Length: 420
Image (cartoon, rainbow, N blue to C red):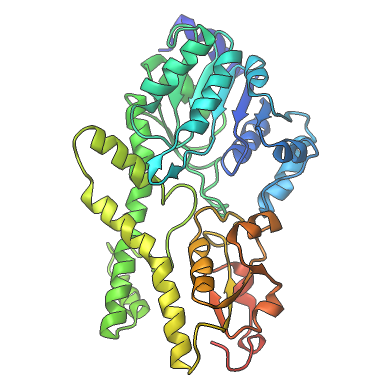
């Protein structure tokens, strides 16, 4: 049962009259804003980035994604989506505030500065009866011991009585249209049970999938970290198997295909590393929570170190391939095709390319980069010489780092003769 103290916000959610504020309109926040606006809610997208606000208010997506490129103009035309830079003002006009700002790991330490700054701004404007949901990935206890006191201090309101606070970890998989925000099950946990129930009702109003209510926010916070570190560990295991196969002269693809014939084998492909905003950072969030409570997660951190090694090993493989053809890495022109962290997205955050390109340049190679999905702003973050596909394929060595759909159409005849 939801008590009388939350009856007002519950009725607004059920009637779609609640105003929803999305704080942080990036790879998570923008799809979220569209989700709620599509469901009939009035949405205020709040972001300190002037470019994001300007593009959103013109009905344009700042993310190069085929779905978002169509959805943003369509939703903007409904009049239910607007963007602002003033987070406090946006919070003061809203009934629901969903925070989806970055939570990086600087020097392998969790960086909660974006969360803290956002909560301070939200607290200054938040009105009585509001629901605040943290979707950003955090370690267990953050909502309870950091977010709650900040909101209470800045607003002068009491959590559980004057406003509600819950955690609902985002599960967005960029570039994956099948498992989108509309159909992906979600988990929620409140700092108190009433907050959890209100948050559950919110997501049930927009998501066509099961919403699981956990006993508290700590459990919800940890669930996201477990999901992502499991993937990081699995990828590290397969990367190590690839290294073993390389040493003993066995085709790793053949081995994995053979293993996949057994019903309970979890197949993952070896890679040049693990990128994106979440997977490389989340082990350090588990590390923070574990060490605070007197435990060191050996397996998780060993896997993280192995995945961090893979970009450097990729450079070793490029150098060896050139040597096998009688060429030296120094002075060779190397084309890196695909600088995003995964296929069919424009996101270069912590992409393996951002380690591989500087390492190749350090060893004396001339490096060109090409990626049809990544805009010029993000291309510059890789620090390579940007080139079109035809020019890139004229290099001494073409390295396909990412399996973009566009690359699958390249014919061998397009690659320079005698190139690797």
